Length: 238
Ligand SMILES: Nc1ncnc2c1ncn2[C@@H]1O[C@H](COP(=O)(O)OP(=O)(O)OP(=O)(O)O)[C@@H](O)[C@H]1O
Ligand SMILES: [Mg+2]
Image 1: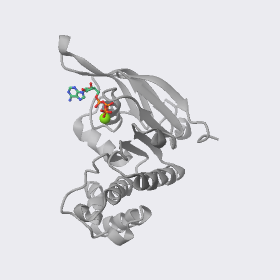
Image 2: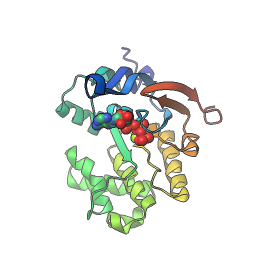
Image 3: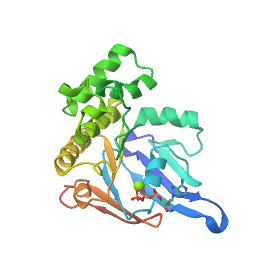
Image 4: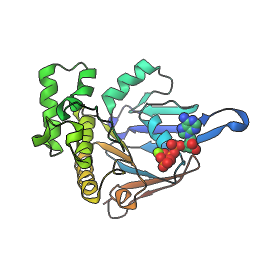
């Protein structure tokens, strides 16, 4: 592996297999996936329901482990790490966004955004400062003390984006982030992803929607646990 960070993939997965169950009942959610993503890329992952997209994202995000295969995240081999080591890597390198927002109920926007910073042991004042800044970036400076139920779906998802960005991760992973959003909120969120990517962060977004995938610079399609195509988005890549 090269030591030149400019040439080192942020994601390098080789021969990823994820099997559920044994023998005749075995399901291969991933049936041999190779995927390399360089820093600063903006990749959409598409494919029919059950094709293995979320399974792949959970592995890329170190939320789950493979049955077999190798995974280098930013040059570090993580497929053999234990849960404790994985959670540290996860906290440092990755921001997550989910379809259902996954915000903590009865907790203000700013406190939600502060949470991953608290896990990293960042002191209270600095935590608050960074969380407020992240909420400002997503256009919610005037909603910091609102709880999830006091926010629209689009606003809740923007809190989730602020939370994912607060730790300044190199990699942003989003699984169907627009699934629960109306078209205006979807468009606002995609503008935000453009900004985040323009700032140099790697963005990987799983989606069923063509208009969401059209905003990425590269589209990877899956079927039956395999990658069946991997193409650059003309018009999005100079
Ligand atoms: N915990 C589990 N136990 C058994 N099978 C599972 C488990 N999780 C996922 N699977 C199976 O693995 C396959 C891939 O699932 P996955 O959630 O990755 O699909 P997906 O592409 O994200 O689908 P969707 O678009 O519906 O979200 C499916 O056949 C699913 O039933
Ligand atoms: Mg899924």
